[in-house]
Length: 260
Image (cartoon, rainbow, N blue to C red; front, side):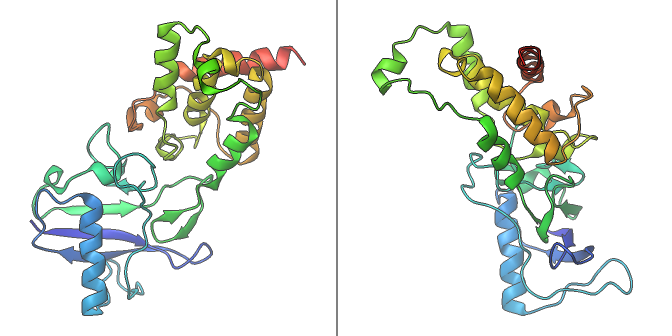
């Protein structure tokens, strides 16, 4: 298979970015998207070529394309990319590293961009700064009370439906697809998943009010937008986190505000 790749290149956070064009050939249908990017970078390094840009007068880079990755197993969420205008690409329920080239037509043009969100400023090329999510977690996405050892904590009775829903929320990998897809740049689905995973457990109820308020306040301070229930976040979440968790976050937050 062969493809034309239209990739966003940006030297640093302050530089003006632009698209550049690359061609790759001999790609197996069973090659993952990130492996295809590896092949492109190896080509750029070995041949020492400058890409030809689509737009006339566009200055080209030499050297490999910078992109984020880590586990390549759909666990860490670091591989986040916009592919043909969709977070993580054309397949639902997967991260970019779980996307395979058989999902694209042979000879097609693929547009690859970084997350487009004010909460995730570009560092270089396809790499964005996702530390905002870390700061939201540090504000309250944890349990600081002493719940005893593992056997003691596990002996606390929890309804199965609550435990199952908590585990579903905890599946969030913090990739940022929700905020990057939302027209408002809202991180509500991420915050809701983290709050919901703890709010459903007795261990998390002690700090529930402080947690919800602190995480929402931090999200707002970091420049993320508000939720208007378009459900785009739910559609693009690779782990299938639903907006029902946002409803729980709203209840937790309102309860915290009323108790002040």
